[in-house]
Length: 249
Image (cartoon, rainbow, N blue to C red):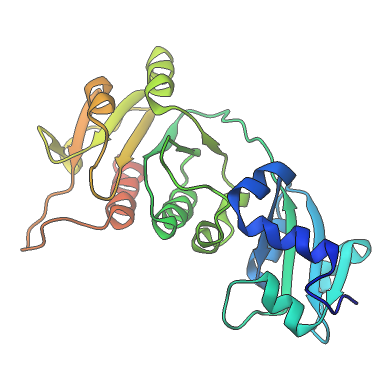
């Protein structure tokens, strides 16, 4: 039982809230029963399981009995960011994920809001996309808000970080069609035939997709707006486009 926030192990785990220390240790922290259950259903490696004193241990977690550390309520609150922690958290090892299927890819260009990134990862997983690629300027995958918004989908979908300009050129050489989401010189997405292999680029909340990426795109697409709204939230727009792509015959 760890009772003090000054414990050396707790100090190291608490540092994982900062990107630099996550990268140094190659570890990140998740909190809440659902995320812990999702990581246990995946092939990611759990370094440690943290349980608050008195918390009920779910059956499936008993397989990690040798990795459990018990902590007091004040220590759990120190480690976690939610106002009402569920009494369970885990330290997870980072892993390099390789994209092996190029059929349907989602590319994120400088998406800065962690809630948007997590939601788009979750939606891409739900829509059956093969992978998500985080471009330069996109928020860190292991940001706690990204993890929470993804609802565990980051454990079930290959997610890589790449320079999108170089990567799109590589994809084009493999006959993957590149689509850029933009309002400029774009066609309504529902009017276009869906290619067998497709990479959809969605862009920064304010600036949109980088012009250099739009210039290499094979197709520019947009979602028609029928009301008075000027635009859609990028994660909402992405969800509409992903499902348009996977449901169009």
